[in-house]
Image 1 (cartoon, rainbow, N blue to C red):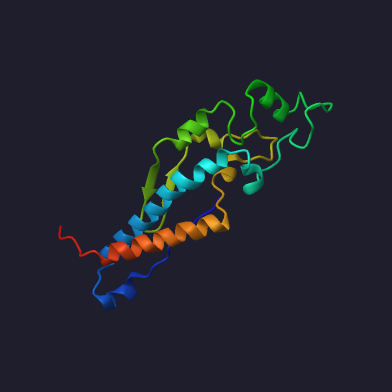
Image 2: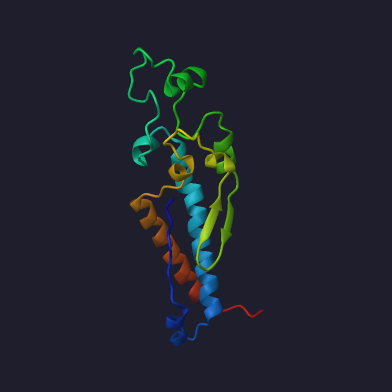
Length: 166
C-alpha cells in the first residue's frame, strides 16, 4: 500500500501570523485535493490492460501463453478472454470497477486522506500470491510527484486567502 504525505510544521508558520488551526485546515484540504485527483486521474489507469506492465501487477496464470497453446483455455486468462472478451486487471464482472470509479468517498484529517474503495478488492484466495488491494493502491513515483505538486499548490493557495471568521 502506498502513501503520500504532506508534512507541515504549524509552528514554522506562527512567525507569519498564521494560527495552527488555519495551517491544519489548509493541510487537510490540500491532502483531500490530492486524494480526489488520484481518484479521478490515476485510479482509472489501474483497470487498463497496460496496468500489468505499468504498475507491475502479479502475473495471472496463462498471461505468458499463446492462445492456441496447451493449457491456455483452462487458465485464468484463457477463461476470462473467452467468457468476457478482455484481460483487464482487477476486472472480472466489472462490478468492483464501477463501484471504485463511482463518486469518491474521501476521509481526511490534517495527517492523511483515505480514499475508501469497495471491499471487493480485499478478498483473496488463500493460495494466491495476488493481493488486489495492494495492486489497486500502488502509486508510481511520477504520480506521486504530480500529486505532491498539486497538494503544495493547493496549500499555498489556501494560505494566501484571508482567514474566515467563524
